[in-house]
Length: 345
Image 1 (tube, rainbow, N blue to C red):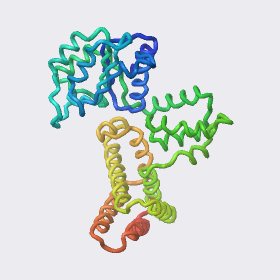
Image 2 (tube, rainbow, N blue to C red):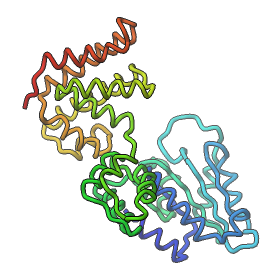
Image 3 (cartoon, one colour):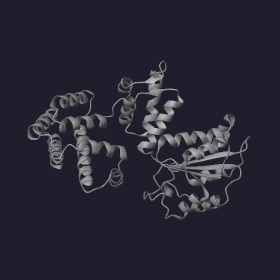
C-alpha cells in the first residue's frame, strides 16, 4: 500500500494535477481528503477554491468546468469528484449523461492551476473501460484498501503510542475483537479510551470492556457460542437482555442463522483444505471474521453445526407463521438443542 508515501508527498507540497483515491477504507479516505484540502489550500482559500462534486447528484461536466476555471485569489483550485460509478462495472442507469470525451481530453491535458482528485470508494475499477485505463495511467493512485488484521493492529498500536498511551495486551486483544479488526471502527472508538485514561495514559481491559459497546452481531456471536456449548442459562440471559433492548426476535434469529451458515461454510471449506485467506476470498468476508469463525467452529463436528442451523430455520418458520408465543420459540430451540447434543471434537 502506497498510502503513507503519497500522503507524505502531499504534506511536503509535492502536488500532482490528477489523483485517483481507490479503496473502501473510510478512515483512510477521510485522512487523505483532509490532507488534500490542508496541503493545497490555505484556510482563507477553501470557500473560493474548493469544489466537491458527487457524480450521483451532478454531471461530470460540472466538475470539469470548475477544474478548468482560474483560481480565485490563490495559486490552485482543488476539485474533488465523489462516487464515480461510471468507472466501475455497475449496470444501474445513471441520473446524468457524463461526458466521457471531455473527461478524456482533460486527463490528457489537465489544468495547470488545479488538482483533480477522484475518490472511488470501490475495491476496483472496470479496466475494460477505456476511460478507466486512461485514468489509472494519468493519475497518481493513492490506495485506501481495507487493511489486513496485521496492518490494522500495527496502525492502531502506532496511534496509541503517538498519543503517549500504553495498552495492556489483554485490553488490546479485546479492542481488536470488539471493533472486528476494522480500522474505521477502531479509530472512531479510540478517542473514548484516550479521554477515559487521560490521567494515567494507560488503557486497561476493564476500560475497553466498559466503553466499547458490543454490536448486535457480536452479542449474537456470543449467543451462538453459548448455544453450541450448551450453556443454557447464559444463552437465555443474553437473549432476554437483547429483548429488553427492543431487539426483534425474528431479527435475532435471522442473524443467528446467518452466523451458523457461515460456520458451516467455513467448516466445509476448511475440510477441503482451504486456508483462512482463501476462505475469506471465496466467501467475500473480512478475514478477521473468518479467523473467529474457524476458532469458533473447530470444537464441533459438521452435524452439530448443521443441526443448530436447521433448528434456527425451523424457529424462524414458527416465528413468521405465528406458531406459539414469540418469546418462547428461542427458548424451545435452546432447550431442544442442548438436550440432543453433546460437545464433540
